[in-house]
Length: 252
Image 1 (cartoon, helix red, strand yellow):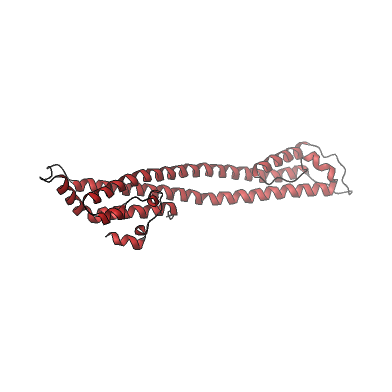
Image 2: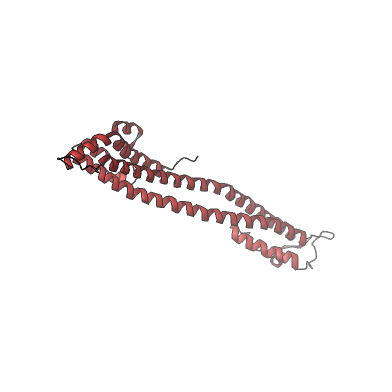
């Protein structure tokens, strides 16, 4: 399974500080709140622990969704590498074929023939531009009669064979370009899903952390309130010392 990105792993650590505090101190926090809010005894249908458990569960759900979306995006990006390499290889092969045909025609018939087959100027590097130029040259090689005399008697070329060579490389590059575009669309989809999960986490975390901080303050546990407080760094998805593995142990 793919590792989560830093932007997500930091949020996981921040949430863990919050949920571990709720998990470790749920019973005493619920008891303190019930005693404070209901000095004459809590109603029969009132269970503060159920509410605190629900808060913790929601925080964990938001993290799980965020991690899942982040990993899906990482997997999608990993798929991109192969198709991009195929695109680069096929682009290089088509460009080499164009340059080779140009060199051959110029060597056999002279530089003037190049314009007749769309081979003047620099050979394009961009994939789409290269496909356009190669398509034009392929069509001309197939349909324009080669009437020029070779510079050296007895030396000729087969323009149709050259067109067939271009056709093979053109097909490969067209397919590769389409594959890359498809992967880019898919990556955009997983990126948007991941970003939406990050926004959902922000809303969930800040609301739950604010409530939890208030509960700890209300119960008189200022130390725990300070530990889980949604600081400016945490709201931005940046860990505090207490959120690190070493610092998190102090929450228990």
